[in-house]
Image (cartoon, rainbow, N blue to C red; front, side):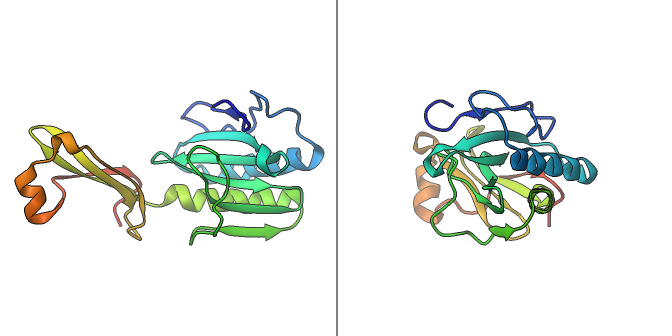
Length: 188
């Protein structure tokens, strides 16, 4: 990603927030302590692998944001030295929503405490079961919906109007999914 928010994308197999690159720059002492605590706690918890990012949100003064991507949706922990805000992030700008979602966590404390809290938040998120419902026509997926199966909260969805079987669409909308794919965790 280019522009105001510099992003580093480590490999899918690890939460590599410790690999700082692509404009994130040097970490100050508080940021280093936060990231060290986050990584240490995540190593103990060992959640399922996910793509992770470390970036600075230039729109809010260059604050450090640790992010993981879950089913193409970024979730992150924004750290400002004494406070951490964890929530779903905008998919392109990597900023927090104007109104916190039901997943949000806000806490104040030492960088070490906040790193551990952020790790616990990421761990809970990454352990939630995720499923994708797919609707198929002539062997091709024409619509899908990915969501947390324990709550039904939709993460992503897609409809390709070129593949929709029009009679089915007009009669029943999408109707029941043709296929259910377990993306992460066990089905709730």
